[in-house]
Image (cartoon, rainbow, N blue to C red):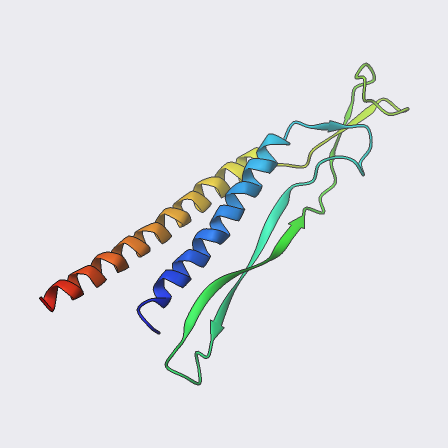
Length: 138
């Protein structure tokens, strides 16, 4: 692993956590959305990550990055609520609410934020170590 690959690894982690934070924000902002059918109801979205470990077994130049594989929608059914007076109620008087769990989303937000901060600290520490190494040569 080269010294500069630390920046690539931490940067990929920051990109992944940034996507995660954006999805949390989208989920929370749509948590109270209402629809007139189950198909149109907002579904919670989550990122799918994978760590890519290149040449770890065969070479000494092993670098691991976070790869974003995609975004998946929750398969949980939306919340049905009987509200015949609601303007978006279907013919049976039901409205469909988002399946977003705001408590889980807040926990995801705190976790993603801390992970992002940890990657920033890795970058800052690596930068300081490189600067100290350069100063040793003076």
